[in-house]
Amino acid sequence: MAIRVMLVDDQVLLRTGFRMVLAAQPDMEVVAEAGDGVEALQVLRSTAVDVVLMDVRMPKLDGVETTRRICSEPEPPKVLILTTFDLDEYAFSGLKAGASGFMLKDVPPAELLGAIRAVHSGDAVVAPSTTRRLLDRFAPMLPSTGGEPKHKELERLTDREREVMVLVAQGLSNGEIAARLVLSEATVKTHVGRILTKLGLRDRVQVVVLAYETGLGRAGGHC
Image (tube, rainbow, N blue to C red; front, side, top):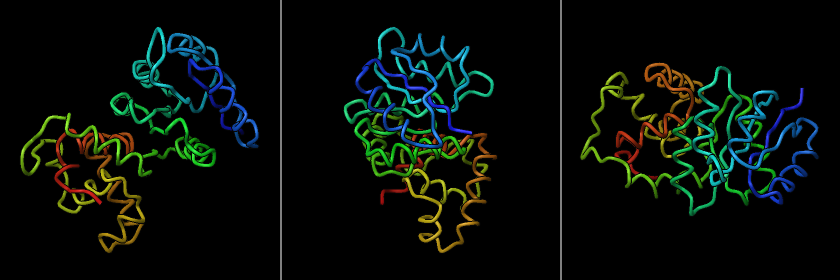
């Protein structure tokens, strides 16, 4: 079955461009469009959607609040935030609201298609270098813990799991983490799964958000 995609953006030309790219894919189908958050929520009540491409700045209801409302529903579609560098704060808020990742609006078509397939399969789009730049820019605005981060949730993790979490926060893939820590990729995947379970997180995006909110992301340094 084709991945059912919804386009939510107040710029008609952008929606048209995305629709043309997606229409050329045998495994994707644009099943709905909306020009603002209010319209998007209305459409989703009667249309089955797998992945929503969500703009952040829109009239009536912005993409962050729309994402929050969508993700609060039972069995919601995946949300992929579309952003620009000057709206990094909105993108980070979108991740906290439940989005499975974000892409720049001028992303190459192949990367956009790969991101849609990734979030549809249950992965989170947090690996691109643009993610690291966003977090590096926005992290100073988050509460500072000072020194080694202390947080009750993090106390549930082993030292190795904390190491893995730091590297996830830096945007590294499982393969890259395995190479860095001299572990097998399967072992890293197991550690990531335990981190998600122990901290009650949905995916890698939420790992990144929590790591930066608690200061763990900054404590680990940068690649």
